[in-house]
Length: 393
Image (cartoon, rainbow, N blue to C red; front, side, top):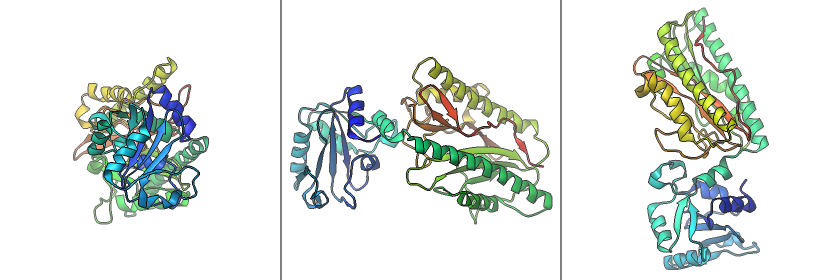
């Protein structure tokens, strides 16, 4: 998606004069992922890559970093003094007056807020209006190729299988009287993920009882709880295939280490499932009607169900996040809580829906699914949907 013609078409649609990708020592990874950096290049000074709405893109680099471009047909602009950098930026922009950069007003979308305030001041001093590149970033970076979509589906299917195997592993251990813990099950799952040819940035969440009320609890060799009969158990698994551009799958399921699910547990699970399903229905209905769906609006719908049930203060995170090569991608998030993500859910992108209710010191329920956006609707890639708490014994 990051070829120049595609980007320039997006710039025209947005009524922009161009997109300035600017970086210093990796502060802006978005710029580094979109600009065609020379192989083996190492930049220790500020650089810029200008993509005008019309015409050829241009580079600006420091004079000591020209070597990687020596065989390029068009040589970069360069500077030595900081005054020359500003002069070259102005010359490169020409008569452009409205440009995109990795900036988000009031840092509303921190994932794309990568350009420092001083650089923005400098650009504005050149007489240009700087607008957020958030929609461009999503369109260029978060839209998935057919191969990425297929890989995500395979990863999701593998995670669902491993989840079932993990619950069976816990059930068999409890029936046989074997001692197990959050940490031992976490490591068992991690081994199964690796055996399936998948990778993850860190080990999965295995949490019992009060630990399940901490959304980012991670057991360690030093800090974990045993898993015993009667315990409430939450599993959160994520992984992707090993190719560099493979897309994550990410799921969360809950179970009870018993032969029944007391009503106080199932009551909370019902509310969370209703919130998830309301979010799915809202997105489907809006897309069917041809209306754009914003991440913040999907979050409001999901959160509203939990708030009306009286548990709003126990739902302490956004409804969902973009899926990418890392756990959280650069596409639209389902979020009007932590951030105000007004971006539309674009065809070709993927995200999670994962409402939760967390009762401190008691237990927490999160039911997480993965969703692909198509032109005509959405596809849930992690079916079946959980509604009933799994009873392991």
